[in-house]
Image (cartoon, rainbow, N blue to C red; front, side):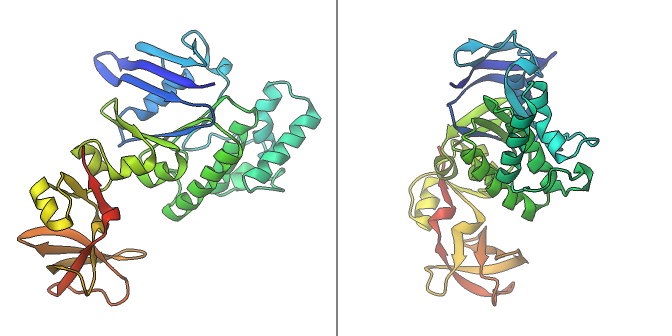
Length: 323
């Protein structure tokens, strides 16, 4: 079983939000739809769900066109940014909602609710009011509710973006584990590349209504398809082949992330520190070398100061070959 999008287009009058998208998601595969705000990724997800009509193209499941199939008959599960839980129901009531609508008998419902609360790390939360839960706990309940009826496809629209950074990172790891343990087929919309690469088997990068690159996370990270994609994925500096060969030993157009250059007392590259900013686990530097400004990183312990001369080494994990 698989989802297949063929030339999917969604337009609002003269404005085209999604343009000619082709994409296939295989059974048991998690695909992240990654792109900046306003690129059309949520509109695409809503079209897959049946919440937005397609202007052209098709959405099909297992070869069957879903154009005439309403949202509630597609068998897809939905998780949105705010969870959209029922505040008047307790945790168990929220998780069981889809099962009740499917007329699953009471004993089977209770067993499935317990199973899912264990899976999402909320064992024993059955009678808790959802209004008493933290944001992360509410999203776990929303995920359990979406998984309860065993949907053919799980659609997650920015499910972690309302959470703070530390909680988002932890919940992304938990969500990746949950999706795999549940054997879910899923399409996840996000603007955060760390989140996308943590969750997905494949990443589809979207820009201005089109998918510009699809690949496994390491391929997209190391070989972005063009300069705009490289910049979106954190490459603040783009070098032409000649300059790249001199600096990083790669004769190609490359993008450098901040981590491409690291302070190293034995490094071959000399530079002057212009600025420094402390981050949680490293120090971000702005350095000047060969008359140009570059980003670099240094350890938190005894970092260099503005005006210091430093030597740098290349960390190829921070180097992306473009195109």
